[in-house]
Image (tube, rainbow, N blue to C red; front, side, top):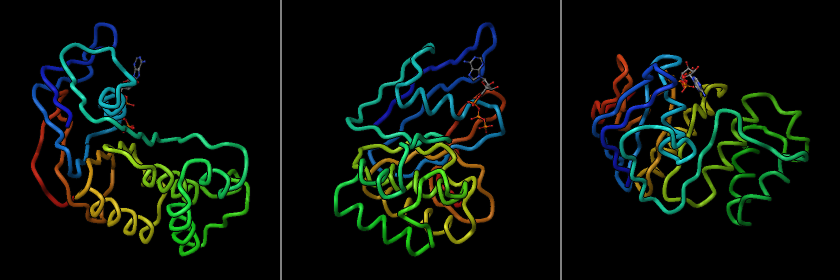
Length: 195
Ligand SMILES: Nc1ncnc2c1ncn2[C@@H]1O[C@H](COP(=O)(O)OP(=O)(O)OP(=O)(O)O)[C@@H](O)[C@H]1O
């Protein structure tokens, strides 16, 4: 669970956003929406605990937190090598199956993949590391329709077991979750809808 009370984020004299009251429960999918530059990535980093420069309270009670940034870090080496460093044998096998299904080569250097292929690898790696809460910062920006559909269904199913907080500009493919919207410098819960 994450509880937020009277949080204000400033850069210098300028207030980027405020969040008066918000709770992320133990399980569920939270979809963060808002225009470019409103502060979604900044907010995610604050929830994750990486950015501590704000006023007010963010009480993150989750023990194991995993964050997938917009540009995840990969080690020099193959796709398989990068996944193998992070995942258990069983989860690695499943991940390899998904990548094969979408035609992503496993034995090539990670930097030889397309942006969408690389994004799928980064997503699967973060998704299959056990955690209590998973923060996803635009994990879908380069994914085609079929891959996005697959990833969204995976996220929706998994959110029945743990808390997943995703930032996305998605339009077109449905994703069922509680929408948290940035509007005029305020963050508020909109309720559970299909975006
Ligand atoms: N360290 C910093 N100092 C000053 N301004 C910053 C700093 N970090 C971020 N900003 C500004 O805060 C604003 C919000 O950035 P952020 O990346 O959180 O937005 P976003 O909503 O995730 O945008 P996008 O949808 O484009 O990814 C931007 O205008 C950015 O320039």
